[in-house]
Structure formats: C-alpha cells, structure tokens
Length: 257
Length: 162
Image 1 (cartoon, rainbow over the protein chains, first blue to last red):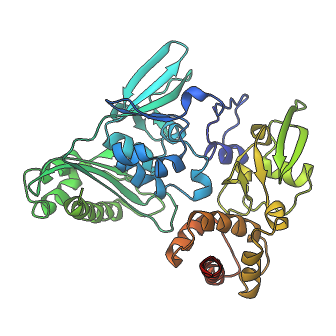
Image 2 (image 1 turned 90 degrees about the vertical axis):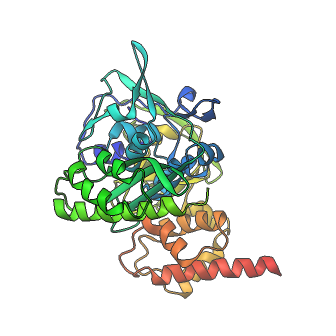
Image 3 (image 1 turned 30 degrees about the vertical axis):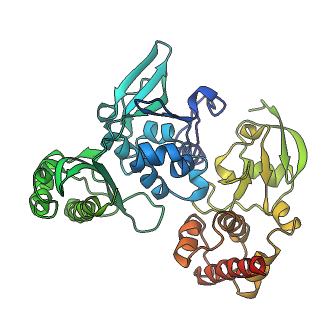
C-alpha cells in the first residue's frame, strides 16, 4: 500500500521490501481531509504532515499534533508523508504514534469485512507491528475533544534537526489552580512501540507540578525498559527520559492557555 | 517488467506526455526521459535532498515519488526555476558568497531555499538552518549557504520597502 511513500519507497530502493504488487491510494478522496464533527476531530489517513502543521482545526482541537508535526523529518518529506502511513509503519522512534496514544485517538480501519475502530493504545503491538490485518488499511484517525483545562507538551531529543528521536515525550495534563489533576505521558524512541509512563504520570497528580517531579522521575524506572540502540544504552535512555520529563513539566506548568 | 503507463503532466510549464514503467522514480524520469539533469540524485532514499523538486507547488523528493504517480501534476525543476529568473538574486548570492563548491547539492538547496523565502520573508539564521536541515552539503560547511540565504532575504525586503 503506497501512501506518502516516504518510508516505503526508500525500503523499495534498498530492496528491504520487494512486494509483487503496489497499490497507490493517494487518489482516494475518502481518505483525505480534516473535519471537526462537533464531537471529535477526524483526520483522513492521507492528511500530510505539513497539513498537521498548518491546519487551524488541528491547532484548535489537537494542538499536540500541530506541535509534533514540525519535528517530523524535513519540509520536503512533510509535504508528502501521511498521518496514516506513519501510524501504519509504527516506527518506535516516530512522533505521530506516540501522539495518537497520548491523545487517546481512535484509528479507523477499513477492510473487505467493513470498518472497525481500534484505540491507539491497543493499535501499536510492538516493533513495526500493529493490529492492522493484511487486508486492511487505515482510513482515518479520530481525536477526542480537548478538555478546557488541559495542556499539552511535546519534546524530543535529536542529534540533528529532523532525525528520528533519541527519546521523545508527548504529554497532556489537566491542571487546576497550578496542580496537575490528571496526566498522560507517552514516550517514544525508548521502546519497541510508544510507551505510556503510567506510574510517572500518577506521581505527578495532586502535587505542585515541580514538587512531584522527582517522584515522577524515579517512577520512570518502573515505566520504561528501554532497549539499547545506536543512540545509547538503557541508562542513557533513562537519563534522557528524565530530562524530557522535567522539561515537559515546566512546559505544562508555564503554558498560558 | 515491460508494463508501461501513459502519464501526462506539466514540467516547467510545458505539457509532457510519456509512457513510463511503474517502477521509475520521478528523478529518473526527469533526468533520463526528459534530459533535465539539473535535478541531482545523491542518496536515492530521501535523505540528502539533492533531488528536491516542486510538485503542485510544494517541495518534495523526486527520488521518493514514482513518475506514474505524477499524472496530472505540475512539476518544477531547477531548470524551470532558473530560466524564469525568479531566483536570479539567490543564485547570485550563492555565487558571491561561495555557497557552493562542487555544486552537487546546489539545485536542491536553491529549490528548498526558494520555498522557504516564499513562506517566510525574514527567516532567522536558525530558521534557515532548520528549513535546510534535509539538504546535505559536503563542501561548504553550510555557513556560506546560510549567509547567502540571509543576504537574499534581506535584499528582497529592502527592495520591497523602496
């Protein structure tokens, strides 16, 4: 299945993938467009990364997506690469799978047998592995509405602009009177798929954002079990995750909206 | 693989009709079938930026598109951009500041920069580096390129103010 092709065509060029048949889905109008339904934001699978950056609807209803998009590769790649393609490819260091999990998105899958919806949390199964069946494609992604008190932060550490992240964090929090009432932390680049840091998120709740930071950073040791990769060993990854958490808590606490 | 498909597109403003193999990249199509060798092929997997062209207005990697996908599209290459005179000032600035040595990356640099300056008439040096981060240059060390882009943006703003 060929959408933006910004990962698939390189794989073909390097003969890492040799499909007998390639189906270009770029012409399917039903997979395009961004709409606010009143209850959720619907993003067609063929929405390009560049559209996520610039769409006023995305900015209003899913600012975390708009914040993440400029971190994806480079302008020429973002003009072609698609949301659906990024989710289906499920690179463990990619931005959009983690954002989809952090926003509790529903992924709409379409196949011969009809359409089904899968929560982003259950969609990513492992390294480049999703719950997509071989006769299914992603049709759309539905993002639930933002709560009025919620804030978001998106951070990643890269060696060079546009590279895949050494480690990254997509965070949402509901904040009232300077206190975090609920938080979602989803890391990427530190596991085989997006990694929710549930204990660390819980440790942030009910405290002053900065006061609970140390407890949350310590809790990351339970949440994360990072495999070593070309960027470093597990302890390097844990260190980067703690740095990201501190920056995220600062960003969540200081946002004006 | 002898199967071919008919495509019709506009390249640098001219209507082009050809039959292409479904596996042929846009980059190979431009270079081999149309003789537009200003588009350079470096890495052939989307990393180096040398093959950047404009498709329907947006910059894209021509090595990551198949020619067969471009039916009905509007493609602009460095030849078109150069002959139109639209980036003559940018080309002069690159020349004056030694923003190219071997020249292999230059077409991609110019096309990417042209898109940047259309979107942002007053980019900071950091924004220039950011936008050009997907275009590799192995000669200049990038400083001269950033200088040339910054100087062009400045002189375009001064011309507008007058």
